[in-house]
Image (cartoon, rainbow, N blue to C red; front, side, top):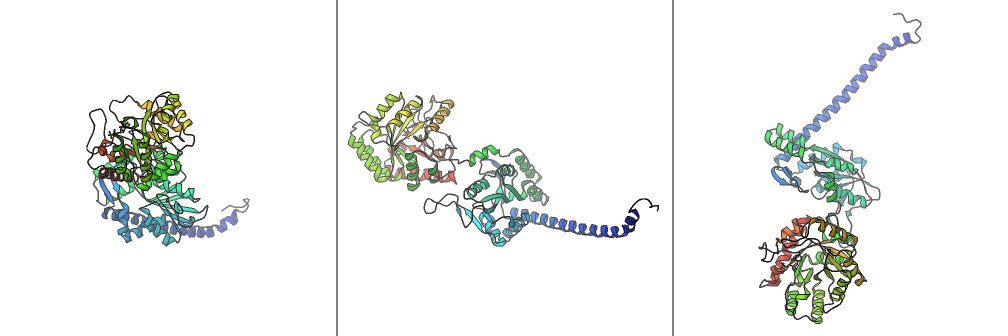
Length: 514
Ligand SMILES: O=c1ccn([C@@H]2O[C@H](COP(=O)(O)O)[C@@H](O)[C@H]2O)c(=O)[nH]1
């Protein structure tokens, strides 16, 4: 070949056979690497498939009509709590998780309570990374810690979770970890339901890695003949059309009062009586307020003695007492102190500020001298609240503002209710809560919802009152405190009846926050 005149070309040609050999060796190395990676990938895929099949076999995957934590109905539900009964399965799950993510990038691991706790424990044992644990509720005694375990400010933590729908459970855990100085950037989960959780977590700075997605899971179960094409199509359709909106998750995360315990809400309350009330409720385990709508003073005192141990509040209509005497309210105060409950006069003030001020602190009833709480209509605007504030200089009293009524045919509309809530927000050191019939102000855990119209077995009286069951009032209507009047006062055994209502209402509250 003619190469003269082209500098270095002959030398290059001379080297060609060596380059060829070098290329062949490089090719072989790359080939080995690729086939090794491919083999690893295939192996992982097989492990994933067998995990999916095993989960199906142990009944951790159910098909039907189920309700998720965020209230959506789903044709497929995962109950991974059962996996603790299958150690071999737990081990393969953990192995897959540890292969999926470089655990050593983290200093700590933390499982989202409760299902992921045993998984996190095994990962901690295998990786030798210390584990921390998030308490679902801060302790009300001792250290009041949210995070248990030993850690330092700035430690990075890998989050471990079983199933992700919206991502809210992971973010709740992340929020508490961050508040304790721990850094979180990654979460490893067994199953991504592909309903918006991954994107929502990413928006909040968390990268979610999953072992299985819902699509993969359905594909595997269908391919292996465990589900029909019809079930697969139903689930695929459901996932495609049921994405959880990040705004709704954000609300549910933002201190949703309906999900917080009474004790956890203490920190948000601005009014001193609201704080006392929440403490009493948590201590006595009661969210029952009895409406003492009796017309003879001695009967009211007797009722207070009977129901005292089971209530957080006793509500009066002082102007219906036929034999009122200042000694009566003095005795009522003694009983309230003895049994630790709060007195509320349901006066529903509605007038110009000056008149309300006199109705509140003057006259025979001298309400402000004994009633720690009063109810107020918002119809007259802020002047009424200013009037009460001027009397309550030491801030030892509070107000429930009425935003909705239990009576049929009430003239209150949505606008009125909305404006009432706005006023309440402006007076949060005076307002203890809102009297209403629906789960309003979910993002204000410092306010309490007082809901009257509660009775077992009745739906109405003959004068427009409407009743709901204790469970409905607390779980569906969002009541924090339920007012029961005739359901107790007309019973032969008021003490026993009060205890029954207390137990029903408390069980409903526990159900609501679980
Ligand atoms: O919207 C409202 C506001 C207040 N109440 C008061 O609650 C009790 C209910 O008594 P029951 O005997 O349980 O019906 C009563 O004192 C009302 O004045 C209300 O019912 N609805």
